[in-house]
Image 1 (cartoon, one colour):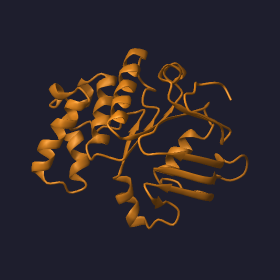
Image 2 (image 1 turned 45 degrees about the vertical axis):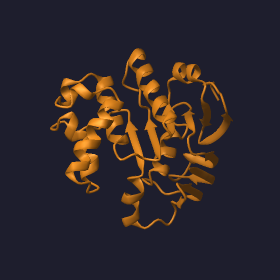
Image 3 (image 1 turned 90 degrees about the vertical axis):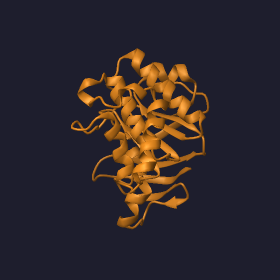
Image 4 (image 1 turned 135 degrees about the vertical axis):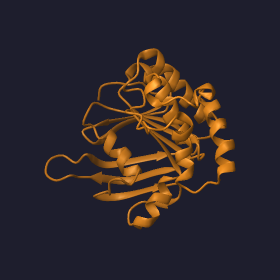
Length: 227
């Protein structure tokens, strides 16, 4: 599903943000990417989203080579990815239903499909009763569930989560991670960038550790250790 071969990303002088990274993620994997601030985790996500181009090396996602991808193709490529951020990025002037439906409207799904799919995905994330609420009426955990529903509504092959529990308390963080685990068990490949040592150590998933742009370890049932 995701393949990085000798990938380097430099922003100019100094150490590269990502240096000679090799990473292979199979369909159905659940992978944590961990490391201190400035270790290259967020740059890695941006490279996978095609927000940044590699300086050298090759990235293949879902069978598509990212370098040299035509601009008009990028939007279509991103539609096959679900993405969740630390700051939720919800539309404040729209209710929960419309926030999730928006992701289907932009790709031209007919109204009858939206009316069927949006309630399904809200049910999956435990928000069936909140579809008329606005983001400001929801807790942080509920807002992140809306963001997850929006990321999942188009049934992506891969879900990228960048610090999804960064703004949440420990109990809510645990609930969101449990939800991500359930999503993974339904077949979605999940890659989570996080600082949350406790969750990583509890969940016993594959852990990729970065330090100064370098992947320094890749453990099948790893923990979060300082590099």
